Length: 213
Length: 213
Image (cartoon, rainbow over all chains, first blue to last red; front, side, top):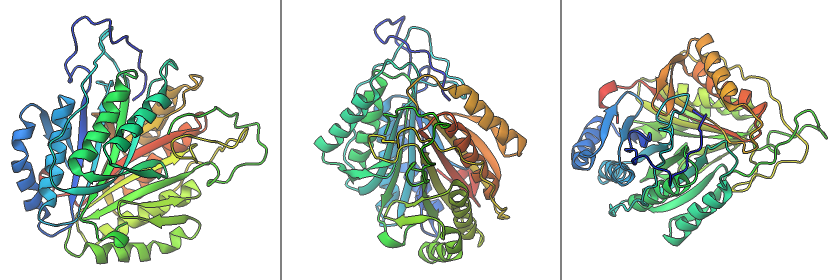
């Protein structure tokens, strides 16, 4: 998961595709009702158009998708919103990764970086609470991780989703689209200087609060 | 989340407590049934004895706990197993963190490291599938992250929980106790040379497989 040779984004030999650069994510969508299968299948059908540009594969733990960052964040926001609209309590775990297209060992295309625009996600009308962690995984020591993380948190303050720092995480609140825009935006921003970056967020919608573990 | 000054574990001025060293975790327990509140409250009651040594706080997204690594892994395994025993589909998101007792900025006690034993978790009888990521977050460049990650994966092979590398994650399968022993063990093992380490795992029990997003 962790042996990255730092590349210079400027020195391109053709820009890598998101797939070549290992840009992708995973989502686990949990719906706390007896009809969760129907709710999830309906959400997948509603969001299918947003997956058109992505490669998607589902297993028994999560759904994996790879492709453009904006398409990824939009697809995951639509899935969560679609599953939540009926008022059921939904918990979603989302992670994004970039810069490690291999598995344990990260083999990046030599001399080819990927600088992506900050994702913009259309509002869903569904409000969520979230706990977010952002992990720059570069070993080279040349990147300024704190600067990147502070910029990501500053962006969350600017769009109103920042609530507070919470143990090991940053608490966000807002439209599911804003939450995922913030999470994916922080990840893309750090990715401009650190090739291998991951981010994890746990998102809760319609929670009866104090009883949810 | 990320500015660690590396400490020498040997040079102790008294061993820090798990709380001082920021040793803790979060769990989000999702039960896919109408009676999820009862199931979660019952699981919390059943596992209460395992939380005796921990400080625990629940909010609308997750339950946070801090304390000894073995107690943390055992508590989370018991919670997941207790919620799953009735056959309902359960999805749990677990993260562990160490070496960052602050929030954005990691202020470790100077000159005091924490070398912990590998957790041993009593079997639960409940089988799970899981996707696991392990993140050494040290910036100093002196730690050999790949050695630590390979050792963590080797331990998963030895206890039989390793299935395969999967995009951005390692797939595990086995008793919930073995899965959490593997995840927490990898985290503790890396923590012997890298002060700030986090790990995330998504755990699925009783999944109807292909319909779960």
